[in-house]
Length: 194
Image 1 (cartoon, rainbow, N blue to C red):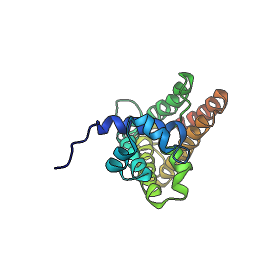
Image 2 (cartoon, rainbow, N blue to C red; image 1 turned 90 degrees about the vertical axis):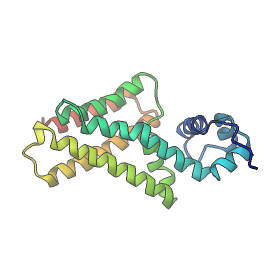
Image 3 (cartoon, helix red, strand yellow; image 1 turned 30 degrees about the vertical axis):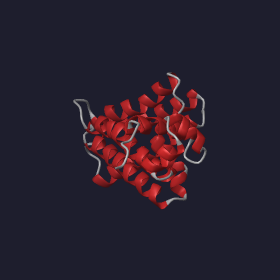
């Protein structure tokens, strides 16, 4: 009879997410992961097969915890769509002001391992498309963009997604807060139609 797992899988994934978020996929060593997850080498490989499979599980969890939350912010609520976009970009500034320089795990994956691994790239692209669609929905629910064509809103949604990813990567690279605030102010002007 197989022995039951002696650890909580969700806690282990939380630990792995922290390690990948801090170090990035490539720089996260096996020792870092074992320590962060509180597992032995055998337990890690038995439960998660390998580093890549573990990272894919972490990305899926990040989608539920962070990407879906951003999508919900952009697509629902009583406020104008442009205001919801502003709230999302303002949250980047707030995170940095509160000492969070990790950026976005999805954005870090987009700038890192997805360039060389097709499986990781596929997961990253699905999540980025979800974010892009959420920006589009927010723009369709924006008074400032009510007269825009669907194509113009799609184009602007793509620009917003690119800016979002870029800002999150800038945060990760310890860019000065003033540069991040400047970019957010510029995006606010674009979104508000001013």
